[in-house]
Length: 285
Image (cartoon, rainbow, N blue to C red; front, side, top):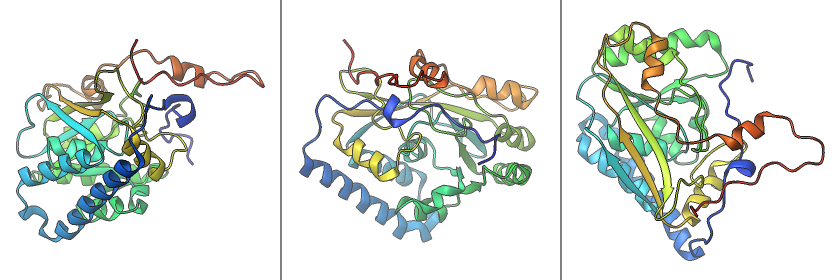
């Protein structure tokens, strides 16, 4: 792993809090089966590609999230047609269909996603722009490919943090992908993603962080009741509003969701034998 590779301090042990009660096992199995069936249907429809109406793709993405037991709530004005760079904070594997429910787009994704069960073939054959995060020399070529896609009128979606966080705090937006928007002269559409439980505060159950596995994360989501995925479409940043990628990345970054108490503790070495911080409860007082 390269030293410059973006990382987050979040881990399942320190950040992911179990729900006070779990969805019954048979119902959780049905949720996973339903989501799997929808993903298989998506794979079958990939050859139709651009001929599928955007509204159908949005509905399918919402259905995938809903099938696993997560309600979807999208607020704000939908992004414009044509070339646009969608950027969002990164919490979960659910972010991918959730952001596509806002605007179907070519995803800029880490190359490891190719190996994900079921979801890997969907994204690999769906026009994803892969980035090899451990090869710094490949970055200019990736930025050029993103700019070319934007100039051609495509929407491209990216998670500029470069790594997923648990949702209680977030990382800074790295600047490279914003250079593509500047080079192509297209707007940037920031989206804030968040997860909570009905009648409670923010939930870390959907987080896909640290050494977590995809299957473990999917099962945790299926067993958690009352999850709501929220996508807040923030004001569009028009071309020319910011002179360079640094200020553009800063303007696109959503407000921090709350104090990063867990993350500060993780970044400080603990004395030998001292346990790490307990996950924050998944409910509010």
